[in-house]
Structures are given as C-alpha cells and as structure tokens.
Image 1: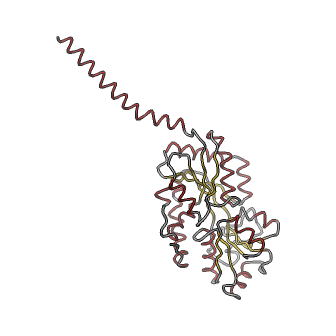
Image 2: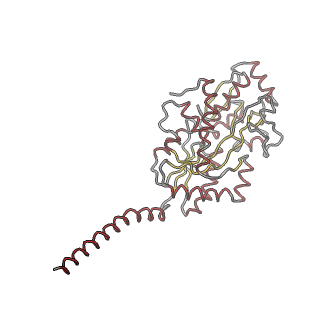
Length: 335
C-alpha cells in the first residue's frame, strides 16, 4: 500500500511539474517566436508629407537600405496634410506590431498639441521614438524676381507695403508656418500666410513667383537655388551651412536669436515590442553609418544624429517649450 501511495504521489508531482513547464512554455515560446519571426511581411513607412519633399527624400533613402538589413521590403506611404498631423494620426491608429513606422519630426509633433486643440493623438502617449535620424538646415528663400538681395531688404520691402507680401508653408501649424510667424514677430512685419499640403506643392508657385517667399527645409529647395530659380537669403541655424557657405545666418542678417531646424525621427506606435524597436534602432543606426548615406544627407544639408530612443525622447520637452511662446504670441489655434 505504501509503495502504491508513493507511486501515486510521485505521479502527481510529475504532472504538476509538467503543467508548470507547459504553462511557462506557453508564455515564453510565443515571445521567442515573435522575436524570431518579425518581420514576416513587408513594412509600411509613413511619410507625413507629399512625395518629393525633404521628409519623403530621407524616408525613401532609409527605407531602401533598412529593408535589406531586416529582410523585408519597406514601402513609403505618403500621408500629407494639416502640418503632418494626418500622417501622425495614421501612425497612432496603427497596430503596434512593427509593421507600420513613420519618418516624421519631433518638432512637428511637439508643436501640434499647442495649435490643434482637437488633436486625436499625442506624441508622448501614442508614439515610440526609434531613433533621431538627423536635423536639417532651414532657409529663408525667395523667388528670384523678388527685389530683395538680403534679409534687411526683404524686411524693408514688407514694411513698405504691410500685408502685401505672402509666404508659403506646408500647412497650418507646421514648422514652416511657425518659422514665418517667428520671423514676423522678430522683424515686426505683416505677412500673409498661404498654406499648401507640402513643399512639393508650394515649390511650383514659389518658382513661378505666385508666392514670393518661404522659410522651409533646405533639401527640396537646393536644386532650384543652384539653378537660380529661387534665392536663399539666410539660414536659420546657429552657424552657416556647409552646403551653402556664402549664405549668412539669420543672426548675421540682423535677427539675433532666430534659430530653427527641421527634424527627422523614426517612430513606431506606442507599445511596439521592445525587441522590434531595438532592432529598428540598431539597423537604422547602421544605415546612418553608410558612406553613401552620410554623403547624400550632407549634400542635402542634413546633420546625422543617430543614437538611442531615450536620446530622441529627450528632445520632446525642449521643442515644446521653444515653440509655445511663438504660438502664444501669434494667437495660433485650429479647431
């Protein structure tokens, strides 16, 4: 009897141990399978501006090189409009499974909650920064026929005919819009805002002279500046751009304290698994170290940053605070 009872007890222990092992395996194996399986299908990279603009150019450059490194095709999906918030909303609605990412801007989404009061997403809540790709030169550019060869002459022209000079932007509440608002406030001029869906849409009108000026990121404008179709009057960085070394800074042109730069950051939806975010961070940093990428981005006036997700996240409060004052002074609000 004792032997039989002992055997029964031993069998019960074995059953309990087996059950525990199976339960543990049911938790661990899916995670391992997930980590090993991703990516099992093509990935979409949202570009929240139209094809042909600076964000689109950088997104496609990264997608073409990042895809082979992770073993899947990455397709760029342009979702322009409303100061990049349409693309941001699309990312926020996406599943957090690693199959939708976005090349956007910390600056755009730091600005958005201040301007769009009914915004359906928040960067801190709905996005997971993967890596800050870099920052780009912002330029004050005018049509070649505008009778102003420098910033002082442009300000004088605007003051001579208040409200007659207009500027183009990629939409209400976007960086280009706020760049011009900051210019208006610091220069004491009255300019008329003409919003477009993106740089690719405003360029034909700027070149044709239907809108005389913009304060925009350099990449998409550079070919037209070099061709003499438009003219760069100043860069908004603290120092001159190596791409346009003869163009003065805003401070050198008389607007001390005027600084702005575009931002290129790769995002995933919030709560995307850490192993996926880490892999995307690691492989994107590897792409940013490729000689042809370094050369191409430099030619576009973009300074590579790279680094960790935490470093990218640290940019958020700085940018929010910077633009809050511009927004308040301009009384800018969209409903």
